[in-house]
Structure formats: C-alpha cells, structure tokens
Image (cartoon, rainbow, N blue to C red; front, top):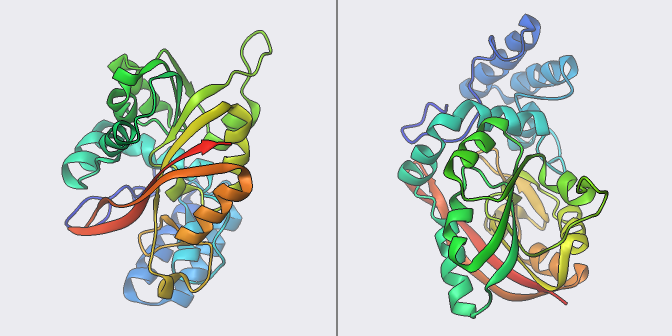
Length: 290
C-alpha cells in the first residue's frame, strides 16, 4: 500500500516475500527509498538494476521509471505487475475502490446507457471485470455476461458474486486477440465494457483493434480513461502520471476511435476516483462500431 492517508492500488513496497530473489528485493526497495528522498537519478539506477534482474517486472519498476521521467512510457503495464497488484489487494478491493477512492464508474456507465437509450444487450464482455461491479451494474440490461481479469484472486471473488455466466483469467488485449471456445470458434459480443482498463494500457490501438474483431456489427464499446491537462501531456498521446497510472489525451482517444472505425456516442468528463481526497479527471466513453 501507499503511505498516503488514502490507500491506493500499488504493490506492497516490501518485495522480500514476492520475488524470492533477495537481490531483486534489495534493488527495488533501494529505488523506492531513493525516490522518496528525492534522489531520482539514484532511484532510476536502482530500478534499472531490478528490471535487469527480473524483466517480467512484477514490481512495476518500468512504470516507476516512466513516472519519474527516467524512461519513456511503455505501451502498457507489465502483466506480472498488474496481476501481483490486484492479487495482493483482492480481499480489500471493493473497500478501497468504492468506499475510500469513491469509484463509481460502473454506475455511471449504467446511467449513460439509459440516457443514450441503447440496449438491452444480448452478450456483454466485461474486460478487467474485477469483483463484478460493472457486471452487477449492467445485469438488468444484459442477458449473458462474460468476465475477464488478469488477477486469479479477483476472478475468484467475481465468481462468488454469481453475476457472470463465464469467467476467465487473462489480459484484456490478449483475450480479445486469442480467445476461442472449446470447439475452435471465436465468439463475439454486442457490448464490450472496460471500466478501469485504459489506465493500465497506455497505447489504446491494440485494444481497439481487438475489440473490433470481437464486436457484432453495430456493437457498443464502453470504457473509462484518466487524463491530465494538456500542459502536462505536452502533446503526448499518453503518459504515466505521478500515481503510476496511464493518462491519455482526449484528442488521442477521439482520433484513435475514429481511425479504428467507431462513432463516439458520448465522451463525458467524469471524476474517475479520488487520490488523497482530490478528484482524478477522466472521460466516460460509449462508442458504436460503424
């Protein structure tokens, strides 16, 4: 957890138990200490040492390097990092996300679906489903619900909620690109939701390409993003923000959707969640495949 007053979803800072490699744990924790002391150059050296020891990057040091300006932002967060992150916090996931961070994006999606007068939907694919908050919010307007999350522990909690007809452990883009039924068929959905996925992606083009391949003609895509002011983005399409999550520019999202073949039905500014009591700005988007 973070040492801030408001808990955030960050990996436990002591990695002694996670990767059993003492050298990796030492380099990672040394980097954290140097970062907190303000020695960003020393922190970068330590983080690069940790990354060299374990390129799978369960501690997310590549994201930390981008956050302190030592490296360019990667196209996405490491899968090992995201899985570790949510496995660690699974038992308190809803308490932190909803009660302390004020996260209510799934309910905002439901409100926007009603406002746009779209649906009901025969088949929903909920990517990054977490414990099932979006599945529950859309339960009354969807007939069949499939949930996917990278964290095995989170998927177990979603299973207990009994809101999904099918549940899978997997990364969102890889699932879109590769998933097949037992008979070898590639299923499609008329609604794909990704309510807290883009802050872990960075580049959105692979996700949109995969979504197009899985949506029925005229199908809908609903997702949320986090953003930063243009003076911070400085023309970049996306960047790792100070809290180690990706922020995407509004123009980048609009252009990427249009290029991919989506019509934007709504792109509403929202408060995604709180950080230390301060609102995190973003957008709630519903788009339709042309």
